[in-house]
Length: 355
Ligand code: FES
Ligand SMILES: [Fe+2]
Image (cartoon, rainbow, N blue to C red; front, side, top):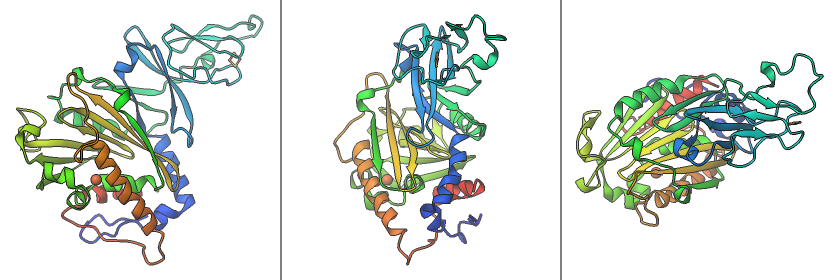
């Protein structure tokens, strides 16, 4: 797929990008090799092990996040004996015991005890550990793992870190009751594209539109990432009293919307952070996870026309409409608005490198 570098000349991806089964399959390795958000560190206060099925119902990579003293590990959640899944729910014990033949592991992944293996030669070896050196990073309390090898997100996370140093990360925690999961009948990239432009806000989001100053909307391109900044209409809604980001005073900023290639969104609001994970399931089926990380003393609001859940439903409706539209024999490629669609163009340029 070729997307012209110059947005003024470029055309959007051909509809085959969204409709072809073979192109969808090609995306697999992009996801397999990417860093993915798995949980917030506050989830490890009461638990010592959390099973994660990375890309459930698609790539299905069974992992386990464990904590031993102050060390956090990402392990394979598969017993090294005959391949049984070790844990199916959060636990707080200090050993991981396989319920098939009783082998147990320490929280760092090494074998603790293996009944019936006294006569087995050269056992245990390092292959018998469930610690497979899977990359894990703790970014301000948000845990990301990479079951593959693409490290490009690390540069983006460093860059973002410099921009949000003032954020009270130490006061945020995971709120299960405010976190939600949706499944929609649309291609994952259509969802990301919609997120990457503020162009549609005044047409699609009436409530949000009255909170933010649309004229001041800014898109900043980062390496493998995009930042969108919206100013508030009203200073009482602003993110922070002091400081600035990209020459915009933070006391005028309503929200910061960061997207990380290919499928992670980290949104900073006055009340806390919302992380959105866009998981492909099928070519026309996508799971969207909304993880709510409020600041102590604040709560994410629901049910109002400007709240995250309301805006989400407005977005889903339009994304599904586009999914139906791109299948028409009378549609193939569109053009970009050079003023408002820099973020979407940047995404298409990056994804085209992997296809
Ligand atoms: S599969 Fe785990 S002990 Fe046999
Ligand atoms: Fe939107």
